[in-house]
Amino acid sequence: MTVSLLVAAFVAFIATTVDDLIIVTALFTTSRATRKPRPATIITGQYIGFTAIVGISLAAAAGLHTVPDRWVGLLGFVPIGFGLWGLWRLRRTDKDSRPALASTATSIAAVTFANGADNIGVFTPLVRSLPVLGAIGTALGFLVLVGVWCGLGALLALTGPWSQPWVGSVTGWSPSSSWSSAR
Image 1 (cartoon, rainbow, N blue to C red):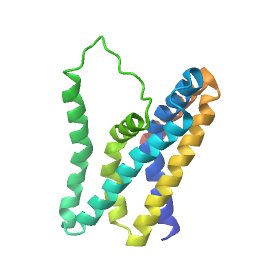
Image 2 (cartoon, rainbow, N blue to C red):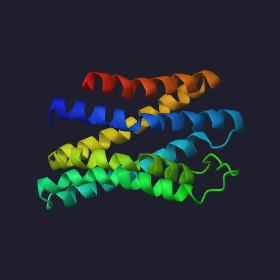
Image 3 (cartoon, helix red, strand yellow):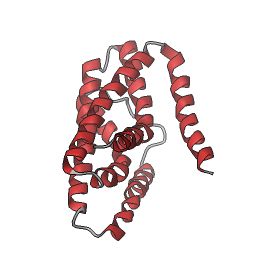
């Protein structure tokens, strides 16, 4: 696996999961304030949810080796489909009800998967372009980076109310800087 592929995988992870850092930070902030969920529960839920995302991406990439290259571009409809499905579900939501923040490993895994399901549309073509060992290495690298995200989220939670604006600023800055460089 070349250095350029490692950099591409790293950038793909960071670019598609920076929103997950906000969720992880919020979970660790809640944990500090209420002792629920426990940090181990947050980490377990993150790994379960992200392992599902990576597993689906690997399976889809393996299946796509039988699909002609001209059809692979249709993967862009995956995140669009998830967005439309989310909008469809919102129409049935009671406006006065506020969902509780996830507190079990299963609910955290569900939030992680729901938040990151659109990443499948990015990760699948990436791992499809790699040899088998490169795809496995990338998947393992992603799982290591989940641990980094959990550690960073826990660290940001230690700053209390100061962490949320910082994470939001970085999140807002990242896309805006990439848009300006794309012009």
